[in-house]
Image 1 (tube, helix red, strand yellow):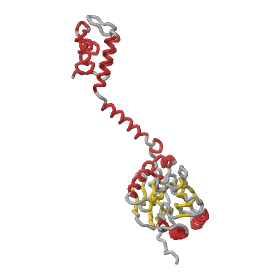
Image 2 (spheres, one colour):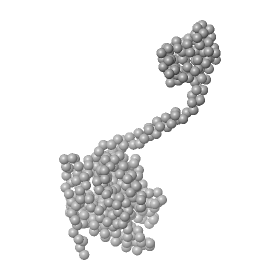
Image 3 (cartoon, one colour):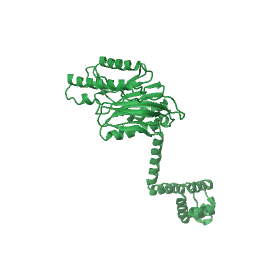
Image 4 (tube, one colour):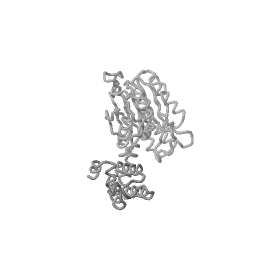
Length: 377
């Protein structure tokens, strides 16, 4: 039977006075829910996967007919087993888009690689008219969970649309800030993220992905199964969100305000500020916990060395006058006032100084009585 009429979510993608673009978008959540729950392999799993395709293509067709600006599938929404099936998918979606100059469709599916038993997590953007804007794959498969998934290229795709420059990556890719910051340097306006999470991890993962929007100054559209599907502004504001725990499900966002790219420092300096802060804190920590006796010993040994070399003399005259003054002034002005006073007073009383007045009189003569009194206080 023909599908029921689709509710319209279309809106004009023209810039408003605030510089924002208003678009209509829809998120198709499926999570391979049917094929994943089939215990067997071969024909049973293929039949379940075909059921996924029927549902996904039918819903995509409805959203294209409703004139959405963007239709995005959740991560691994279905499975493909051959190049022929992939070409058939492209052909079907291309036929839908051939009659519109408005709708973009972002596909995400799990594709088997030959007979090797490995898979790729494919992310394709198709533009109005049916041409492919980008065809990439997940760059960072989840360790252990996706051990059978081949990693894709570690470069972000870009495409200039009527509502700004687009880029995108799948799920766990956004856990790698240095990878995503290329979007900030490319001044991307809208970033697309198909995702698939589970349990409490879904909410936590969304909060982490939300930071990427702030770091790089783009609007984030996230379509996730078993997690949070949401729209996030470049300043981290949640413009819309839906917590999905079941699927299949169609999430409609009739009006999304896509902000122009916001300049941010992070894409250019990365974690430099944090690294400098850690270095400075480490230095402060080491200074704070340095043993006081170690500092005292170093300074006293230095003064004792000068004594041994005969820099200091007894009697009414100085020996090595210039060097004596240099030692006293440096020890006084190196934030070691108390140590200088202690050394000069102790050694002066024992060995004598200028006019027999001792080391304290000698220091007073060199730095001035007023400065010496301030240091004593």
